[in-house]
Length: 243
Image (cartoon, rainbow, N blue to C red):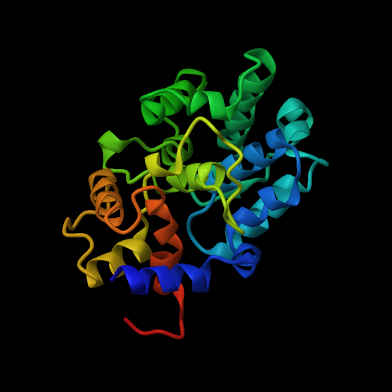
């Protein structure tokens, strides 16, 4: 199994992966702030049909020269017509406002926010505690919690982008999270293929399943288990292969 998965990583983890993936957005920028801010926003919108959320992200990042400018001057943008699935303009405004507070007022960063021992609850709690309407459906969807049966797929994907090193796709610009500490971004494609390969026994696509699968993948590479996200996800969406 390790030999097969390693070969699939080599097949799918390459620069061609970037052009159709939401990670294309942070690859447009060079400074650490712009990369992590654009990556975070892009990851939160990475659900549903790719062409639709990529279109929305192109519009959003097209408003300014840099993502840092977007959060710095968020008040001047009219987002009244912005809507993507559950996420409405007021949800997006709240997101930009909180990122403004994090970077401008608190003089902190997303890396610092996610560097605590309990990084998921600490980070998610920060966004809820600074939101004017935390019960909004769109905001709750962006910041789903493990206790609510979420697999935290999008946040784990964002952390993979930031922390994995020596990759033609991921950035590896964060030093406070080791690749060995990452958790697989579990979505329907990864879960389906993992069960086909008997890598995942649990039936629900939740945080416990993400932990279970990650632990199994550590048997193949304990230092970088989530590199197999490329293998499992790539195989799951590869239309040339039937499963």
